[in-house]
Length: 95
Image (cartoon, rainbow, N blue to C red; front, side):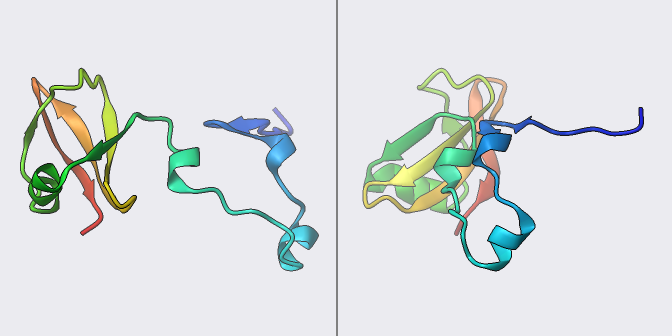
């Protein structure tokens, strides 16, 4: 192989990219984490928010098969959990 052009990474395609010159000029749009990550997003109440902030394991009541992003009711990112047997455990905590 002498060259490779990546046309897609996750849910982002090459059509959404910008040139280095456009980037230097500030002509680009940053995507939110929700737009970039290909995983379910679950908004939780304050009780579950407290448990997530403290890194507690959670029962997998949502049928998650890989990873899940948890957000608070006021739209703050709390953490990403991953499946471990029939539970969810912290993969990345944002607190």
